[in-house]
Length: 517
Image (tube, rainbow, N blue to C red; front, side, top):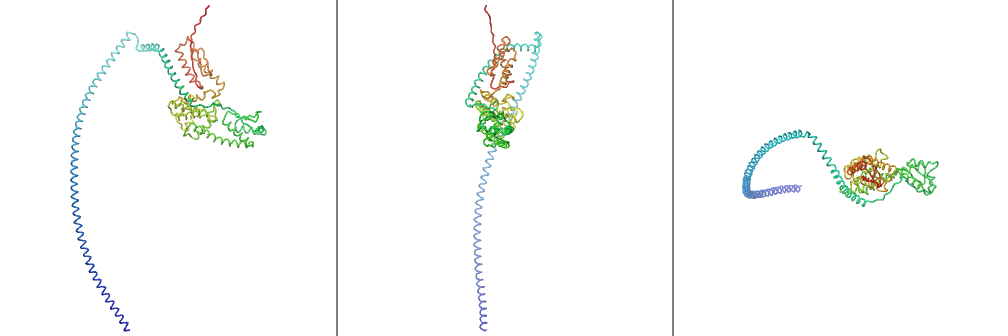
């Protein structure tokens, strides 16, 4: 027990001694740290004072340099301002001199204006006096001659007109001859060049199509029981089916090539299929019509591609394709339009016009024929409406409207399209004209020739391409015969429609006859 107490007391004494030692050590260390801190503070203060002195010195040097530079710039600015002031003073002096000169010039101009006004007034007064004198002289002359001024003028004009009539007619004759010679030579050259560069076979479209049959038994199947198949075919397709004694062949007759082609393809499909009855005929016909629409578009696209044209509406391409199934006097309308387009392009190249626009106008000049069976009106009116609908160029619209002379031509391309249309239609074999129209055209030519005073007889020759007019020599002189030829030409152009050109020849001859007895 005593031993434990002693241990505890010893431990407490040790703790007290240790705590005191720790406190003593802490106090000693604190004194040293404070001394060290004071030393560091004094060193930092000395270093700061040194940096402060250095900064002040640098600042003074920089301010001194800045002051010098500022003074230098001020001196330079003052020098520039002084030089500018000198220039301004010189400019003011020159402006003052110029103003003085302008003032002097204004004074001179004003003086000249006053002088001109005075001279003008004097001239007007003199003119008034001259007019009065001339009037008095004219009155005196009229009194002496007993003839008024108006009557004298009319008499002089009549004499001049009678004297100059022969000379004017001769001059017109010479100039017309020269112009015709030059125009004919150039026109022939252009046409020959165009026709040499473009040539195409002439094929005449017939109004019938022949279908070959595998055997004669097929004729009976096409006719059907009591003729029901043939009646259905004719009713659906709108054509006439001719079945005669011709071996292994039947004939489709129609003036509409489009219907005839659909009927031909329908019958050929029925023959291959073998099932021929009214219901099947209607099915095949409907399918053929759809196929024909695709074929029409393909034909139209090929025509446009062949001519190198672009930006044509698909509906307009469809109209172009339909031209392949239209004819004019046996001439295929699409082939005719392509031919006109090529010739128009070649002629346009010869005279320096827009080749692409000329081809476009040539291709579309007969576009109205594609739907002239469906819409009322002439193909020219329908074509103009179609061109306006698809916003074609005004040159194309005028070419369509004027290619038959119904409307005045407003461009060179319109004239070229009319020429190309005439070339394509009038060349031998291109079209089949009826005998009735041919005879009527000859009669009209002769009637026009006989309608003029002084004409004895008129003869239409060369299949209506020439008219020879014989005049009475005692009533018509040589100069008047040229006038008659021109009047006949103008009347033919205004009243007749004809392919190609018509040559007018006026003949005047005097025969002296005697009989020796």
